[in-house]
Image (cartoon, rainbow, N blue to C red):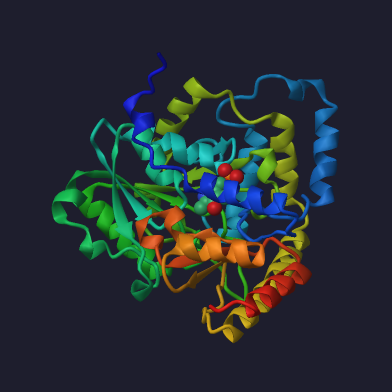
Length: 385
Ligand SMILES: *Cc1c(COP(=O)(O)O)cnc(C)c1O
């Protein structure tokens, strides 16, 4: 008799499994499926980064267990990158921690700071790991709705005082997945004040900072005064350098928070492969034209999709960051994506998959070529939407 622990039984159902099943059914019928649901860059890792990996992997000293906090050379590269890109000063010795991709850091942080029953404030809709990581640590996630009328920022004043007092952690993510919303420095300042008033640690997840358009520059949460006293920022090489499969990211900011995360990590993982960290150093310190080129490509795709959606009467403000387009649709989001799949062979993600406040929206990811996006728009023209 196999019995799952309560914390596993209490996880929300994995909606994306239902979509995968429907997609496989349609593909089996021979339909040429256009998948606009994947938040994973479709283009390869830039070749100078791959070359750095090849060189590093030839060196036997790189084959051994890494240190849990990461190579100092990688942490220095991350600190230098933060100074250059974000104008944030970090001590590579204790204000930078290497992660095996940022998802790992997000999932582990509640284990370091939540006692059973402690509250964590999580946005909704959101990347699911803030909520699930809190549940796995026996914490109690409290949802902060991200509403269109608030530009998809949480309304901090709407958080009941009793909840705020009991909360230990707050997760935020701007530029945002799935809504593509951005946050101002003023909002980050309000977060620091709120966090000081209520003694809440802030975890800002920032993997899309470099994916920005139309002259927009996404700030670091740590660039506002007082942020480093209350929070950390998670960063990832996955989206910026097309390195999702490599598993490399880092956390920066408050040294005591990082030390708590580090304590969990020393006991559950053994660090990121050093050859991958060396490739990461090349990514962070090498030429950055690859980032500009990717943004040019995403912007072109964004414009093609938005022009098409507008013609269809689906009006969307052009996102200034991320590779997502968040669209309000008629009816239930799951029914809408099912219709898109069955009638047009297009896969989009239903907003409900990101939480209850994602209902009524769908998410397109700009991870297909302009030709494929044009084809998707042509197919949607034939539908009644
Ligand atoms: C993709 C993504 C991540 C995970 O990135 P990895 O570094 O590959 O683990 C984290 N947060 C958000 C919001 C993401 O979209």
